[in-house]
Amino acid sequence: MAFNHGPWGRSSCLDLLCGPDKWKDRILENSTHCKRICRFRRSTIELIRGVGPAVEPANRLGTLLRNAINEDLLAPVVQFNLYYSLMLKFPKMRFDADDFFHGMDIKVSRFLRHVDKCVKEYGEENVIVDSLE
Image (cartoon, rainbow, N blue to C red; front, side, top):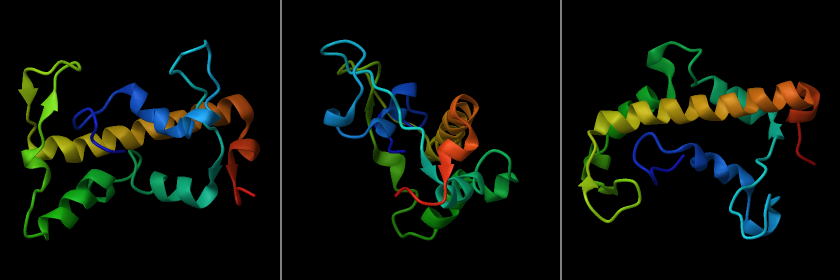
C-alpha cells in the first residue's frame, strides 16, 4: 500500500499481490500482467476488514494512520513527497497530507474488493484460510 503513484495509487498497485517476477503467471511473453494471489490468512483479512470501509470512519485505516502520525514530531510526514504526473518527468505534483490518509482507505477498499472477487470465484474455503501451510 505504498504511495508509489500518489495517495490513491493505480489499479496496478495491487500487482504487489503477484509476488516476485518468477512467480508471475504471464499472459503474454514480455508482459508485466500477472494473476494476483487469491489465498489469504483469515487473521489478516479480519484485521484489514476491521479498518476497512464497513467500519465507522473513526476506526478506518486512514484515520488511525493520521492519528498515529500526528503524534510524530515530523507530522504529517508525507507533505514533502513529489510525484510525476502520468509517468512524465514534469509537472511534478504535491498532495495535501489528508489525501494520503483518504488514499489509504481507498487502497484498503480496492484490496478487499479483490478478496471478495476471489471468494466469489473460488469459494471462501479456498481463499480465506486459517494457515497458509
